[in-house]
Amino acid sequence: MRKILWVILLAGLAWCGWWFAASSGMRGAVAAWFDARSAEGWQAEVGTIEGGGFPMTLSAGLRDIAVADPAAGVAVETAALDITAPAWWPGDVTVTLDEGPILLASPLGRSTLTMQDGVMALALHPGTALELEQLGWTAGPWQVRDGAATQMSAESLTLTMTQTDGATYDLVAFADAFAPGDAIRAALRLPDSIPQAFESLRMQATVGFDTPWDRRALDQARPQPRVIDLHLAEAIWGDVVLNLSADLTVDVAGVPDGTVTLQAENWLKMLDLAQAAGILPPQFRGQAEGLLGMLAGASGNEETLDVELTLSGGAVRLGFIPLGPAPRLIIR
Image (cartoon, rainbow, N blue to C red; front, side):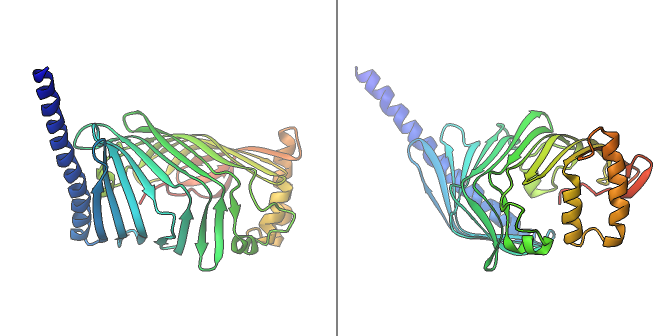
């Protein structure tokens, strides 16, 4: 009996020693990351890093965080960020976001994000590279505001990124009741007949990158897409239904090559919206309607547009008709 008690006591002491070492290591790694970013010329500030979670959980509570990458022109400020992981494997990390306003800044402007129950879960492979196995981000109601105006909002958010083989990942994203804000509706001159929220907004894709996502994605260069299989991108907004799929390869300069399939129901309504927003000049409305009407008729349903776009040589073409330059697909 005494031997059993001694074994239990020694095991308990060993676990306590492991927990304190791992907890200190987690907080030290977080502090070292901020120091390293500061040494690279970033703004990387954190007020305090608090520990806790004994005996089964490792935690690091970050307070008063400000991070800015001057090269990308991106900055984030938040009052709190809580990082937790099981003590037996610190590579399965859960990050809980603050429900207060999170400041976001980019070359496009400044805005604030508020999000209920925002949680990010990361599963990392063992090893010094900390290669990403799975990433999930879920949240309840959220909104992005620009000053006093709401830019966009939704009732929920789900983003997942799951490693399937090496540097290849399955991506899934959807938002329930996604709604552009009044400023966007006004800029697009949307009529009141267009519903406030989308009925569906979702995406499923498989993307092969040049390198796996790991700690170097933050410390050094971001992995870049090389193969994109877009299974489905769907947007349903009132009478407008838009579906996209794509099969693309991307070169080292970010130039895509392949095909994009576009299906659009009530495409005349889309032309109305594009003209009202100033995207389609009135003098080109007749030409666009005639061309798209011919293509819709060829597909067998004059109200549904079903076309395949070809991306090649840095240009986008509809059959033999050039439509413009292809976008560069580069993650900064």
